[in-house]
Length: 304
Image 1 (tube, one colour):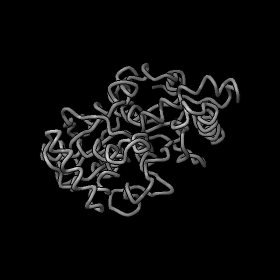
Image 2 (cartoon, one colour):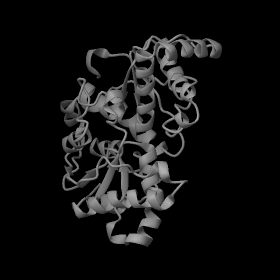
Image 3 (cartoon, helix red, strand yellow):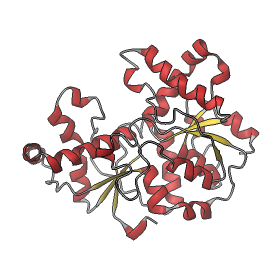
């Protein structure tokens, strides 16, 4: 259970019931196994991610604030989200409310117009990864492992927004937050599950998701760098913690194969899928068949 029985609200965001449904399914199973309540925010809306701020500052802050207000009305002191972009947007809204009185006043009016309870600004934002690693802890994870991921070499890919900017995320500044430049929470969890995690130099670079439409070649280049360095480090597969990063890399694989060669390709999976496997669940229960890249061959060879 999370420490001190903290009341948490779960914000799935736009991706988890669509492109990230495999992440959602595996997260539900892992949460159930670790006794983490998944209290969904009802009537949640898109957080605006990183794009909306280019259109309207007020809208980019209002969208996540509405979700935070709904969570607070549930009695939650913490909102947990599985997407790096969502955590960024929610945390950015908190900072704006706490530091900008003018913004806070305008948001109060917008919330009133929308018929949503006012928001105090006091709800903490956490990534799902942080909740499992810190609020639950490694001992609880190890106690749940029934089929260790022995022999599996994993490259943990954190993405660019998980700890950045730290003035929003609190990385390296608050208890329970990861190292801002050298994050390790995913490595810790997968090592607790029996896997070997490899060190490689691009675990926090951009996946290229923001360039997919504007410049596909840039997007492919970033994704190729992640897979290439993971292959150079001897990884069997890449583990992710963000639905947008996962899908972007997977959708670039055919182009990467064409431009850089098949030898650098590694299957891409969610870290919760691997945790679930170590807890004794099947590949189907972990929805690995719903990923775009196929990790079944690698996992079968490893006996999973």
